[in-house]
Image (cartoon, rainbow, N blue to C red; front, top):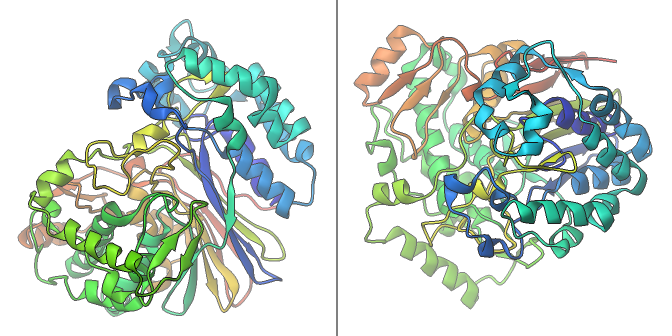
Length: 548
């Protein structure tokens, strides 16, 4: 945990496009000796007066209106105090040094700075940090963030309260309000990260630990439950098999459709979690896949599944967001069934409805890190600012998130519809795979909605096809969703597979080379026989694997 927290604070300084203390995230923790697992959710939360700001989508993304209350400080401080062995000033020292003394811009960041120059110019303070006379810093230049260093020093000395209460909180609220936001001191003072057990599932004898709602770990488990019904290992790798790739693409389409239908803030909506995660539901969804062609077509014609018959008990969520399986057969359960029937029987065309729903923020933003120590304790941590460079608004050196862009605003029946004080749905899903209660794979990825498809592919590559860490990471990727007009394919898929997929009814968009559109997996694989660790940093974006 010392290493994970130190790295998380530091990467928020040197990869400012993807994360930082103005954002949020989540982490899965596994304590190997104790065989205990935890999940810390520290995703941004809407202001209690957010509706008053009148957020209007893309027109307001680069203003204070798009900022939700950041959770990174609360989450990392909670993790360090609960599981760390060093004090906060020690683990924050590298981040403070990198902010105060500066860091050298690498090629990846230089390209992202150039591509997002309009965002950097949307706020005078942000402009002063990341540009020189209006031009973005280039590879080899030094970026110094003295004001951020001062804010980090305050957190190191005072902990969580140094950020969420007192003079710093007052200054940040004032600055955000001046930029169009309606954040309050109470928003900051009342923000709490949550500590719970992670979602747990299984796949071919491996235990899967991943993120809880409203993060998207359930989509990973649901997909693996579907794929478990098919012996992928008996068929060629999907890069050389249209049948395998089609099956996986249709699985992706199913879980994306269910995610948009059912996933939202568990403190405010009822999620049929038990049904979505059940093996029986996975088998039923596998039975819906036509192995010969895209069915139904086009991609947005797929109806969500009905997980309620696969629930032994209804899922009830308290105002604190903790789930409890109770009230079986109660009026609340009947309401849940009636709600499901209403959604499934809507008169509106499903495809038209999907197009009307606000799309979640696109892009390759977000960052991930994976950590394991000599005793096998491990952390999988994903954090984000929303879009690249978040809202683009900087106050007290803190570049703030654009998490309002993750909400749905037009479909009032969506579980992700905006509400004051609500946490938006997110695609992040840090994860850990265990083999006989010992760490096997620690992994995660940035990549917005493609995180889900990328994570499914990594598990299949490692578990079904026996790839090592580097091979699994370099294998070509693909993405299929009910929100897309195309099946997106990275280069490396055989030409014959591409032709066959088109014959099966798929509309394809093929990318040249590897592309950060498909994420940036950072993973650690543990050899079950030797216990040796192997790490792989995705070549699609910045990162490195280091051992100490």
